[in-house]
Image (tube, rainbow, N blue to C red; front, top):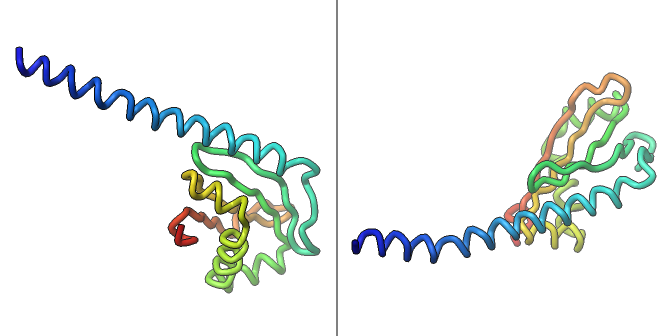
Amino acid sequence: MQRIALSVLLASLLLPAAHAASLKGYELTQTLEKVAKESSAGTPRAINEDILDRGYTVEGNELINHLSVRPAHATQMRSNPDTVRAQLANSVCSNPGFRKLLVSGAVLRYEFSEIQSNRPITTERFGKADCRL
């Protein structure tokens, strides 16, 4: 009888925490979907002469930016992966909106592919630890 009472007590203590985590995850997903929709307005759009922003999607807690790159620039990116990551990290970590998403548990993912062939170039992910949050 004591074991049953203890099990019921533990379950009653853990269920609110599980529900809160579930609600937090749901709210994060809703926020990410809103950001993706707003940020995808007007896409595809040129970021510069080498990069085309194709918009955002959401998978779980990841906000994914899909970017297409000219082949010559893709070659440069493949040759300098550390530079690519450092430039993206600087951009992500200096953006207050992105920082807020990261603190909420989001992961920002960048998917780069070549224009026309859609050949993958690189995927970079950033979480709050990457920005020391």
